[in-house]
Amino acid sequence: MKEISRRSFLTGAAVAGVSAAFAGTLAGCSTTQEKAPETPEEPKAPATDATTEAAAAPADPAPAPTPATDGKPAWMTAPDPVPEDEIVETTDCEILIVGAGVAGLPAAMMAAEAGADVHVLEKGGSFGVARLCTAGFNSDLQKSLGLTTDRKDFIMNTWAITNGVNGRMSSYGLWFDNSAEYINWLEAAFATKGYKLIPAASLEYKITNDGIGMAGASELWQCYPQMIYFANEDGSFFGTGNPVNWTQVMEEYSTEHGAVFHYSTPALYLERDASGRVTGVIAKNENEDYVRFNASKGVLLTTGDMAADHDMMEYYNPDLAKVVRYNINQNDSGDGQKMGIWIGAEMDTAICADMWSFSAIMMDGKLPDFLDGTHFYAGVASLPGNLMVDTTGRRIAAENLPFQAYSVPKLTCTPDGMTWSIWDSAWESKYPKDGYFVEDYCTSNTQEEVDKNVEKGLTFKFDTIEELCRHCSFDEEVFMASFNRYNELCDLGEDLDFYKDPVWMCKLDTPPFYCSKTCSSMTSTRGGLKQDERMRVLDTKGLPIPGLYAAGNTAGSFYGDVYPPNVMGSGIGHGQCFGWLAIREMLGLDYIHANI
Image (cartoon, rainbow, N blue to C red; front, side, top):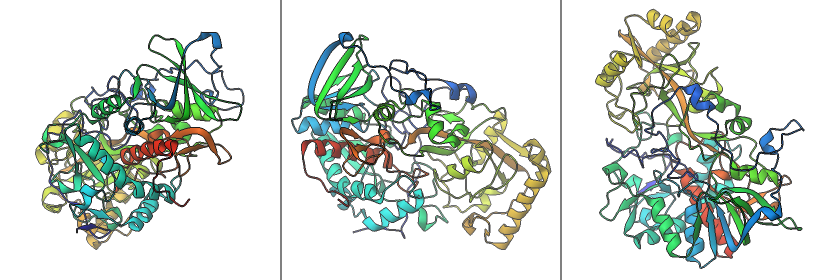
């Protein structure tokens, strides 16, 4: 058996031509086919002015809330109840799922398969788009390939990386302990439809230049073999140009087993009985009529994240106001979180986001319109051998932080969430040959690509470092101190400031010099309604609200300051598993409980 531990690293070869429609975000949310971008992480939609994009306000399906008078944001105030004589229809069921996305759909599959009377409400016109993968640990298909993970190693390492701010070790254990059974169940269900699941670690395929498996990668950032791709019967998947529309498969499976879907039917607010138990929701159907759904066993909120409501997002994390590129679904406006807040549910005190650290941006602050949905980094600009500084010229972190990790200091330690990446003309000979992928999901790391970017005005070339300094409008004293200090550390062979691995400490001394500006990009938020180890939503006293459950990006109590870059797919993986577990909890079915 091949055990993936803290001392082994995932490797793989780059594959070009990723299908943009399905090579998307690593996290679960209730985006829809109708509204969501083609590629959840980086859509192929034309890039727009960053200011205009950030200001786009999503439509609120609920009645306009009464303006707050207590100093709280208006969205914290519940809408007025719909008059009884305006509710035209009542539907009684056992289980109501609000949100037909990547967390809600497996829940619908489980409920329908178990014979429950389950209805699913979806704000958009269709089910959620298929994302990159699912994720789990030690399933039968993983163990058959020798891909196993140590429980203690996973939980403690993930806790350390995310800072443990909102996350609970019991939540990590809950996912770890139940994910194998979930993946086994999902594999069996998909086999009935003619599809298969394939662990990503068993393939020669690399998503992006994320530091994992690269020369100089730290043991702290070792990647677990949790990502699992959906594939056709012949083994083809999005990486070979044959994506599986797996959310459609989930919807079909649910429907075949009796689930009823209601599209273009946003839930407006939750209803409770005299005891305080959540009994259902008031919604508005596709005909704009008010309707009531009663659920005798429980309501599961899987409405996605809050990134489309910028006021709400920035309330829980002001640093996200610095994000320039929002590759988000406008349907994900925190509807489930708001409904919970209105009845006294507790929210995570802070949220993080699914981030891409080095998205390209033009000098004028606009997003480039010549980069497609998958190649959205400037060539070479994201490589860890570069010197990266903020817009004053100050170095802020080790440049070899992988995947999403560099996003945190980029947002918290800079005035505007942007950095400049700087390298010299000898980069190709200086950087370790096995240290970067020439062609990855984000860009082409070649001199040819650099030259193209120079022609387009995305990357800039200078004969002297002083010229580069003036072009970037750095504070000369700040930048030259950073530049000289960096080169001194390269000569020393040890990064005494940030401890970047020595293989990436490559002195900048060979003109011409290159630079390219990068911004932060995000697809969704991580954090929401606090929950216990039974997926029950908690009130402000820390007690479960009877009848109310949450999963996916609507739920909290899992992430800390950052989406853990060594657990790619954790959003989809734990969101799906927890939605599945919520149904098992409602139906009294067995599963492994954590710490209780």
